[in-house]
Length: 285
Image 1 (spheres, rainbow, N blue to C red):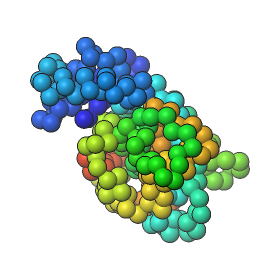
Image 2 (tube, rainbow, N blue to C red; image 1 turned 120 degrees about the horizontal axis):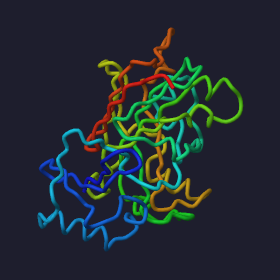
Image 3 (tube, one colour; image 1 turned 135 degrees about the vertical axis):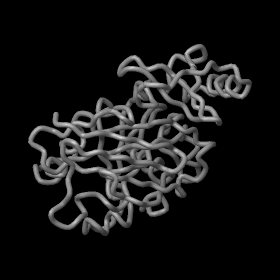
């Protein structure tokens, strides 16, 4: 299923995109697309049954904003330097263990919302990423377990980053990752059964119409399954938590000088095969 939330910011309603591309209203079936729903097999079954029976009313998508496909996000865990080609372009050694950092849930915005270039920023960068949405509580996932059984679905994430704040200002990466609007998510949350192998997805990103990133999750240093298992050893993952799993080569940081960092007026578009497409105009904060 392709689950999404539509409407004005803070007042989104749950919806479903059917196989014919028609937007369907879920407000009579569920309250929201959130961790509580993803952990409730019976509720998901009702959604699926209603969709298959043709019982969901159509929504007019004209002028309707698409919000983040997940409400009440608990935490956004991010994995850095997780693609072989991205590590090579930045001159970094592939890490021996996943690099873990956080984005605050309030950085999450809709897939087509405006993204703000922070005040004083000269190194705002783009990163298309596969987002993993947790559907079952994952605590110390064992080596003999299937970590993907804890995954409810997947979405497109844009891990917008400010490289000076992240790398040159001391401390952790968090200052360059948590600026306002720095995590567009969506358009849809696609349930895991529809996605199949998460290590066989193409990712692309364009800046002002020019293709910058053209990669595949097959290049990940640590697979989605490895990441879920690893992170669960250090923190509990709850339904509705999100993991951004890293970006392939092609970011501004890895380009030759002068590096083409983002400015107000730039337009970034990104997509992952089967998970939909985003488009953001950048403006000054």
